[in-house]
Length: 145
Image 1 (cartoon, rainbow, N blue to C red):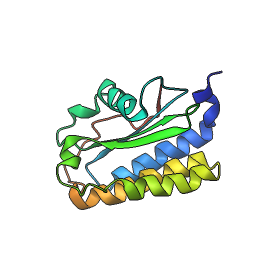
Image 2: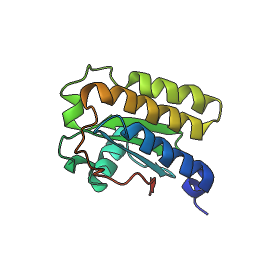
Image 3: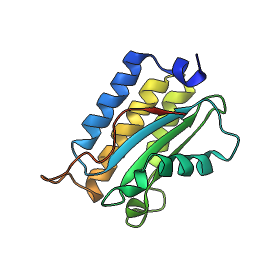
Image 4: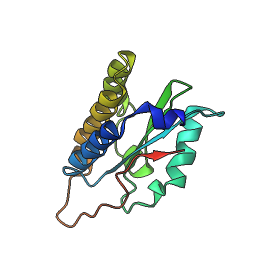
């Protein structure tokens, strides 16, 4: 079993997917979580690669958000697409990162991800509120690599 498969139970993964669904009810933004064992390159650079591999740069409003984790490296990145980054303050993702770090330091990875997802959704609704005609452009499932 790989590290990313051992990282969360199936039940914990479902709770994270449920959090994504809840967060996206209030925003047209698209949130994804990607977990992998390790990265041999800078975590931010790897997160950007994954962002593109998952097609997150293809959303209509360019408002995708990726929560990327490299388990063995003990690192994570929160990154948003250009549509978000063009309109939000430079420190926009700091509060999302901070709520995640608080839980991660205590070994509460599931709760850290859930808190980060909900915080991202809460922030996104101010810039990208949910519209009546919104469609879910990206899968809510956790991707692994």
